[in-house]
Length: 125
Image 1 (tube, helix red, strand yellow):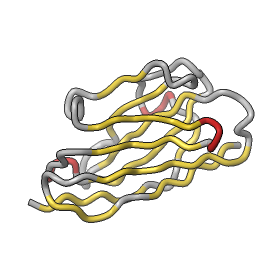
Image 2 (cartoon, one colour; image 1 turned 180 degrees about the vertical axis):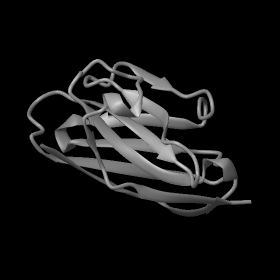
Image 3 (tube, one colour; image 1 turned 90 degrees about the vertical axis):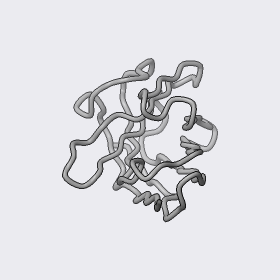
């Protein structure tokens, strides 16, 4: 079992920045790929970005490419999501997820094995 704990969400004006963190605990001795998803009210959970275990490969949804950056520090069991140039349409609950397939950088929600509880990001116009 892997427990994921997100933090860093909040309220920000359009054009601003936020940095989300996701710390893993539990069975962290095996390699996991990590991803960030988001879910806005009334919408399905959507993939935002993913990173391989090594950190050498990443993938971004078109909607965030060039604005968001995913990174990880395996020594700290933590993955980060730096979000710049935020837009009102980025408003959602953001979830981090872990996948037992260490090389995965993109996928559907069903392909990830463990989930955090989510952190709210609200971007005002």
